Image (cartoon, rainbow, N blue to C red; front, side, top):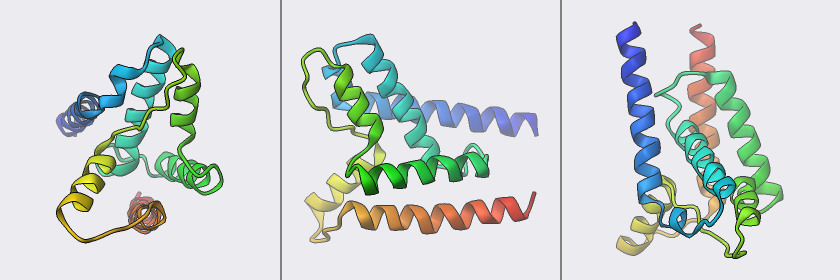
Length: 138
């Protein structure tokens, strides 16, 4: 049980670091607070899109709910907006997590086109189903 937890934490940390490396916007952030917010953004993004790694269903539901509210009412991610305000250069950054890279690949290599609402729908259906399953089996 402890070995499984250690492996899950290692995979989670690996994915967060990989996302930060793949995020070209990280280098354009010019303040420490902006970089810290960007790292937190990656932590939440990995937790949000890979809930099966760190199994905390109630926290995942909460993060999922906040994400949906942010994207629905603010028409964007609150984390990205706050990070942009921390930049001295006032340059807006495009947060580049796994979802961004997958979407970019799909758009460039297929004729499939979809918007953020489809992504939110998939997140809700899959995330909600998985969390309900975990909560019922506690």
